[in-house]
Amino acid sequence: MDEYERITQLKIERNAIILAHNYQRGEVQDAADFVGDSFGLSQKAVSSGADMIVFCGVDFMAESAAVLNPDKIVLMPELNAQCPMAAMITPEALRLEKQKYPDAAVVCYVNTPAAVKAESDICCTSANAIKVVNSLEEEEIIFVPDRNLALFVAAGTEKKIIPWNGYCPTHHLILPGDILLEKEEHPDAKVLVHPECRQEVIALADKVLSTSGMLKYASQSGSKEFIIGTEVGLLHRLRKENPDKIFIPATKYAVCPNMKMNTLGSIIRALEKKEHIMKIPADIRVKAKLALDRMLEAGRGD
Image (cartoon, rainbow, N blue to C red; front, side, top):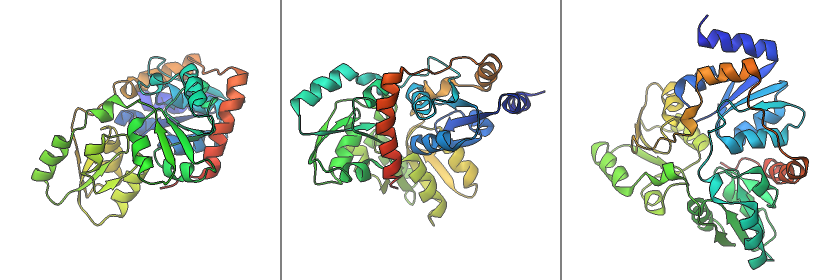
């Protein structure tokens, strides 16, 4: 029995579903029941009839699934799969920021710990961030933790955005020179970049899109070549869904080592041993769920 067969067997035995983020290893994406971005995975976690969710992503994603599904067992195959950006904000630091701007609403990117979500008014993803901000009555918005996404949102709203100074180390590795070099070699290619990228990189893009937005655009576009400015894991799905098109990473170094920790072996171990159950304290869970529910009500946005 190979690893895929063993995973299928265990899923049936446990009534489990496997969710994988678009940045996961190709073989992990292939083993998953659903592959998507943060918003899509959150929706799938809620709508699933499974008793157990195996979440192949990083810590904040498994936390969100546990917050939205208190009656289900959420397993995280690799405990050390942490998001560096999520670690750049704490609930204590956010409370201090809120004291500085008492009239501001807090919009919290999903790439944050549950305890930070609990201190926020509403969550957002890269796909719906502008839509979420514009849906609020408040004119001042504290936006945490990604400064690059905050600045991207600021360009799409008339509200005053107060950015937190966090960032994604993987997207920060993508430089303007990388885009320009690839564009020189592939002059007809469309440049698609993620809003977590630096502003100088965003300025060179044909489209600034979430991972789900890139997938949708690539499938519908008449173009045959694309330079992709995000974590390289997305190229597996782009190539799989569009075999007649060419996808070039903006840089081969845009690899999130934390996203790549999950393997077929760790999925099997998690299912066999019911290992690494994600548990959220009840008081945090209730408050964080409000912020996530508001995001789901606001909709996708791309």
